[in-house]
Length: 229
Image 1 (spheres, rainbow, N blue to C red):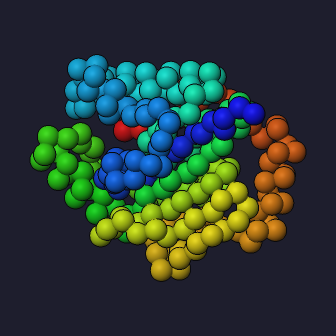
Image 2: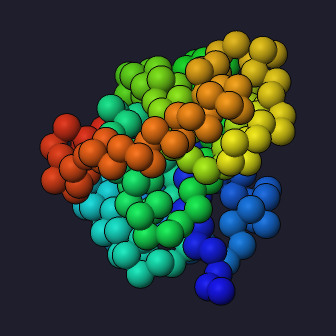
């Protein structure tokens, strides 16, 4: 029996603490290749102030991501879940088609102000910056897209990092193991269903392959829906 391949989506707004989760819980990412557009940008010698450099790093990340899915290599990738969310849904469909188990690890923040302050602190330390207006826009988009991406994922773990990392919600396939969403009202509550309803929805998706949509590499609308940045 072949080893189960994993596609791990580490999601959250800029400054949420996605990379912090990676450093704090390395066991979550064992035997999976790390893809991160910011790190690719640094290796390419790019400048985060330049949109062209950011775009080149994003394209390289997507190229490597598609290659990993096609060759069935376990991977984990960071994303803000901004934009229309279509790109991530396409990638999840592709991963499932190629036999991957998809896990979503989402890091939430109480509001966009916390995210902006975190990004500012990161820049002071020499890290990658993002314009304030972009962070504000992405905050709402990310929280909105969370429900659709969580629904398609096989496993979902949600943390809140407004003050410190707190485990909020956990689902493994159709079984909800932990649900403290009521204590974190800023997190989209539509991510969870009763087990019976969740199973019905999963069956509906499996039995309706026409729901799959076009390749995000060819979708100009998804410029803000990149896997990272």
